[in-house]
Image (cartoon, rainbow, N blue to C red):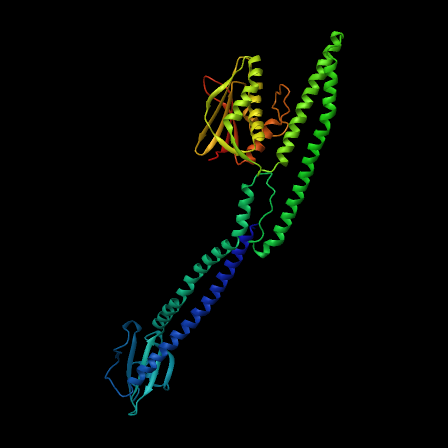
Length: 433
């Protein structure tokens, strides 16, 4: 049994229309059939009235009547004579009778003239039934044509009635996972109002819970920064002291751990700020200037590892966004490219406009990402099957949230060119006029 409410409604209405049409058609057929029979009796009566003052020497078909009706005028004479059928008819009283004529059932009208002669108007039952059936079927034709029309109208009305539900489903399908805006209930049918009110209440509770979680993460990261910074300063103060090699190694490990922790806290704070930030706070940003500044900051790190960091194209492109957020996007992507590019590799950065969009493209010559992990690369804290460096796995998650907040998209793909391997990150944002 179908679980679709629309399917159930259409099936039920179809059954009602078909059953009602069948019952109505049967009654209409019987009524039309009986009316046709009575009409043919009336025709026999009218012919008998015309033949009252006329006589013929022999039986003959009646002129002026449809030849297919096979109406015959029979002269019986003043006394019984002729065939056995004529003599039997002569013995009947005047009026309509069901009789047998030449071995076939027939309808017969008997009349007696003032001079005592008698006649009969006869018509075979077979032709009468055929004529009545044809007339009854013609009566059924409008009903038979009406049923498909009603089914079509029913389907259209049901489809139109469920259109608000379909529109709501389509709106929810295209929403981002973090879009918790209330569903519009003003234009929805009254039957959907309680359901929409419940859904909106659930969305409000989810939004409040997510806000609480984000604020907790931001507050916790902020509170942890102070003791971690203090510990880092104390570790730095130990550098000038003379200590055994083993203690010096443990100190370096401690400083490295605190550096990773501080970086993680910075990323958590950045993620929380992006979750809590308002997308309406934006301005026109020259994207190429931000990218050039970030590349300039990272040139020293790239040079230490002999990584060729430079531009393939740097067109003048503007976007409407928060400059700090855009700088975070560029820095995360370029840092990742430099970090995962082996010594002596290269990182190419391109900025250009295409079809009304600003494109930022970063290619590296690193090992790339396994195809099975491409979809998971934007998940928070995901660092792949072989993590390396001090990364926290939050950079790409932050990038995706910022890009999505400003109506853009990001795509990560492995380079499959014969002369080069690595990873390509492409960010697309609506270009500002």
